[in-house]
Image 1: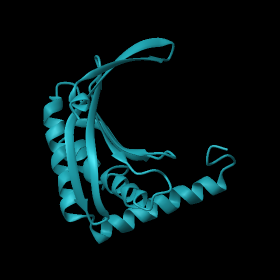
Image 2 (image 1 turned 180 degrees about the vertical axis):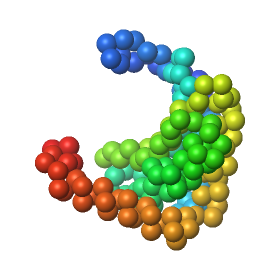
Image 3 (image 1 turned 45 degrees about the vertical axis):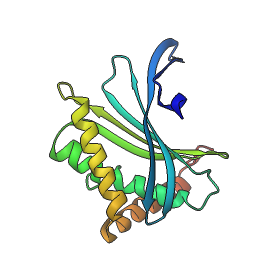
Image 4 (image 1 turned 90 degrees about the vertical axis):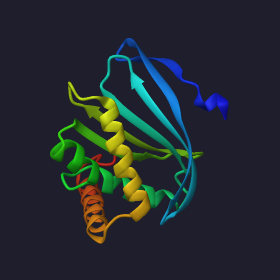
Length: 171
């Protein structure tokens, strides 16, 4: 596990340029949620010169039934003015310009990603502390019935729009 805790720098070609990204593990955690227990490694990253705060938690593979509650958590956390991260970080405290969460599903394993773009002049450590508190609250208490309803409505609306648009699902 000591290899996981060391910071790593990765060079990636993006937009025809070489870009440096730093990744480091913020440790391991066993999360107990209403959907089950998960052993996780929490990764953080930052591109040189970037004001983004990123977190990645390892998640189950795409066929695993435990992925669906993670999708719900992503919907509850971001994607609308009433979502927990958006409401607190973008609208109430005005610490970030945007925040997003999503599940990146793959055949062998997945990831739960959280990305926030910090406003100029705001200390990223303040944003990280707020993110930690919001995520911890969701893990401890779960979503409210209203949050579940809103998340289901947004997900269904996205699906319907995809079926009504030529190539709506990327095809």
